[in-house]
Every structure is written in structure tokens, then in C-alpha cells.
Image (cartoon, rainbow, N blue to C red; front, side, top):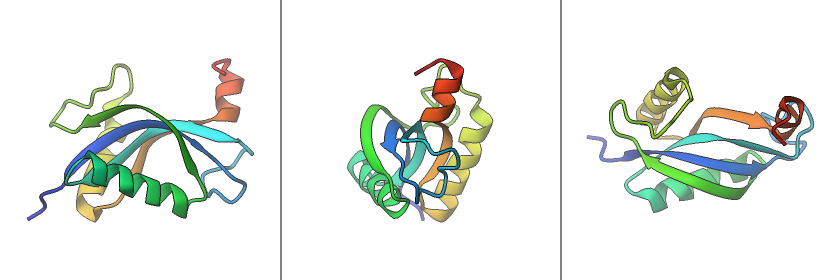
Length: 112
């Protein structure tokens, strides 16, 4: 029986040229990671490990939401990608990205 909760962690992380998701030469990305853990501390530890393994470093966190069915703590994001990531995190007990934007994309959108 799985006793882990799922946490949605809104954050900013640095990217390096060796980061697998860095396809545009960005310096950082902002996104929502879906992390399993018995508590927030364990979920954050798993996020740190995931970031380290992907040549990234946590720069900022502005929101952590414990997953409850159909309540993602999101205002405008489409929940389909979040639901898929939550399901994968539950099944595999691993961190997954639900959404993210690189610094180059943010610049192109005029958000940076």
C-alpha cells in the first residue's frame, strides 16, 4: 500500500548545457514539479535529487500544494498535464514535471 502523498511544487531552477530538458540554451526554467513523499520535506528532498541528477539547481519555491483529488491549487493551468504527472508520480514513486517554461521562452513571451 502506497502511503506517500503527492506534492505540486512551483519553483524556479537553474539549467546547465547538460540539462536534458535544456534545448534552447536557457539559464533557468520555472515550472511545476510533481513529487511524491510521506511529507513535504521528503518531497522536497526528492525534488533536489531529481534536479541534481539533471544538472539543475533549485533557485526559488513560491508554492507547495498537497494533492487532493481535483484540487491542484492552480488558477489557470490546464489540469490534464498535471493529472498525467500525478498518476506517473504515484505509479513510479518518482518526480515528474507537470509543466515548465525556459528563460528563453519567457523572454520571447515578454514575461522576463
